[in-house]
Length: 437
Image (tube, rainbow, N blue to C red):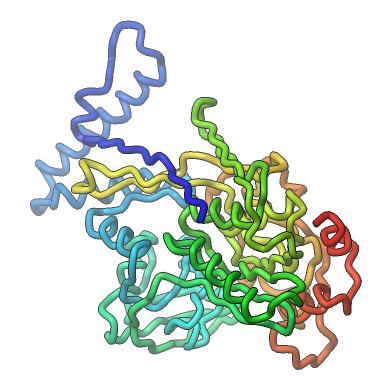
């Protein structure tokens, strides 16, 4: 198994101390002077509120709210984790937590469902991508940060919660009552579809690469020498751990660049290359993507596509092309910054930020009409103050292939991918892929 380690930023920042210690040496540039003046203004306001507010304020809470406002104004994916939230986030990537199984985002003050996780209370209750959460147990969410909303959604397994939702262009809300469950860190799932191996990756956690490798071994054993290829399903995979996206890509690649990240300064540039060894033995791969395919899953889709190791099928992905670093404050005792520190680039050198990955074969998820309300198709470009795209023209507007009217096909994208793999549908991009491998 190929493993990769990322160097984290072990930066401890003392907020109030930073005001006093900000360097003001002779010749300091205008940016330093401006930063000092801004922090001095905050310090003055903090002291005045502390001294004169009608009731004694909670100083720690004021600082936490100030930090949250400051960081969340940068871009949709930067935020401040208070100590409790930071501790909860560590648990989420390592084991299990009590909750509903929802991936959510903040969009112009609204809390929107990016995707429900497979086999969780949310997916079983019929909650869909694009649904807007208006309230949790009757409490409106206006003005709450994304972290605070996540805190409301989580709780001990077995406890009940009621969500007030709005869907699509409807002007009426509806309620869904759910029971929280122990949400396991999402595992790789697989099964055979005739002579084709189907692999579902719902998220990227610390165990994803080893789960993928186990799935491929199992499928090889089940199908034997007749195995035609693999369909890797990354639909509604909201991402996760970067080094696992790199490891999964490397599992299918023999050589070449997987991804590079470029930060604010040239010295921050990093690149990861594949090592020899393809667990799929060069068999053709089709990667399924949709509007919920984001971040780490887009890294995998982009790497396999650019190296012509796989073709992508579905609809244009979410378009989150940025990398976040968790920077503990005071060793985590004062929480942590979840800060956007770089953009990532696929092997071809292109950024998918706010544009997404356009599929080689555009296929709709169902027979929905082409004039769906935009809320049904959320993307990075819809989020407020998102990092701008390097080339807005890259976002695909190709009309996808749709199933025949009144079709009873349960999963049209998967069905279409199987037909392409089995040769029932001729696709030039797949023919080129088969010949290349």
